[in-house]
Length: 125
Image (cartoon, rainbow, N blue to C red; front, side, top):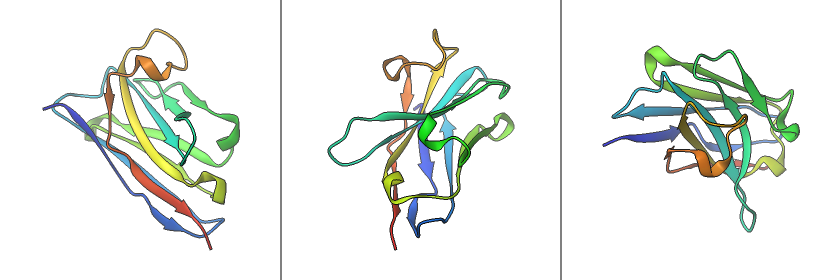
């Protein structure tokens, strides 16, 4: 069964850091764009960041630029989202997703082929 599994979420104080992981099983991520999305209560799911299959191109939403860093390790079949300088407004369920090659950049939410189950990130003092 092909799936993505996120890990690394939790409770952190404002200004703190977390590193999310997205592990693929049942398929290899080599030719997939990896995306990170988040959804806060009562809000729509929004794109946070994505990274090309080879890692050479990245995209960040304005509200995370300079604070979050996306990366991948194809040998480990895993993607990562390093989140620094976290703010209370970053509180959400974070999802990773994968799309094969993708037809647009950044890929639209509906283009993604696989989704993880989500991991909760809570930023609070």
